[in-house]
Length: 224
Image 1: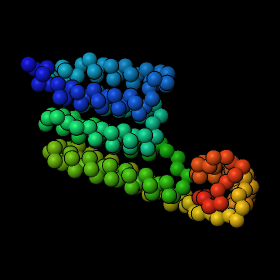
Image 2: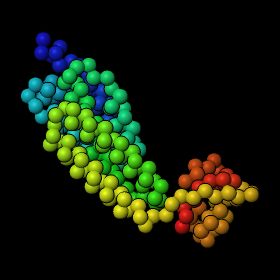
Image 3: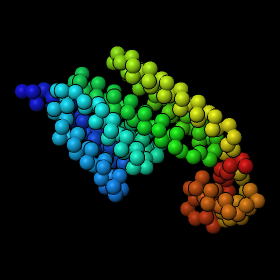
Image 4: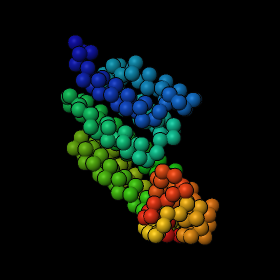
């Protein structure tokens, strides 16, 4: 009877752990991936006991922490957060588990951002907007859940992350649009725009071109 009562929450935990593994790509990541897979396996096995006796949130956060350490980017964690948020909890306890899991994703996003070297102000602005929106939704859910301590912690972490991003954005160049009459190679375009052909790969990456010998007539480059 007890296991049947817990089944909705256990199903949600399983779906969250499946998403963590899928977005981290743990299968191909050696020791770091093995640590994550072991933690996920331990949580799957102990989830019924933890649901009844406590400690599940701590182990779930450990899985999110290990997933981030596999090298997840901000955008990957953001997709994970949206996936977890889209899961359909079947009862009140599952809703709480989902609320905390989404908050754990926000925590990982802040950690990833702190370790990311940005190259343009536009990218910082994009990430700042996504981060703020994610935290705002999570804060609202935590307030509804009545967890004042976690709500305050999220507010503080969000403020610190946004302040850090704002400070780091100031000295960065912005992306500007270029227009050329003919198609140049990335090497020539880098020389024309920066006076430095070694920055060709930077232009290729920013514009996602099919072939670096044939750059689009219109694209984006850094202002400096």
